[in-house]
Image (tube, rainbow, N blue to C red; front, side, top):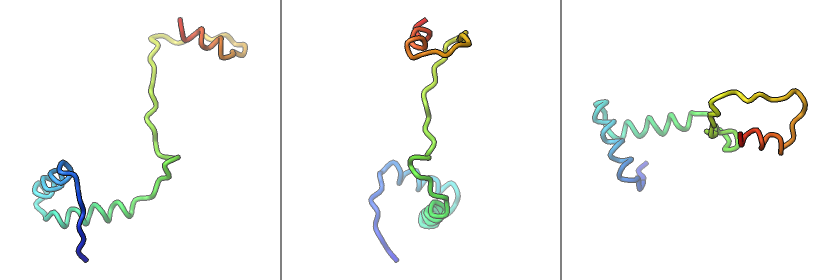
Length: 79
């Protein structure tokens, strides 16, 4: 079956270059990539990995053994 897709120019250049480097047709490359994508397990958006920001403090925080409240933690973070 024939169909038409509007692909961004940058993506199309990438696909053409990859097909040429692999010595295969653009059609064969796109078919393989689509089939591979359909076989991959679907990951719900809520479970998708998210890159969380990290903060380097330079030294470990010395926390007292008693329970800390939000104000105590905020004060420690401001040091």
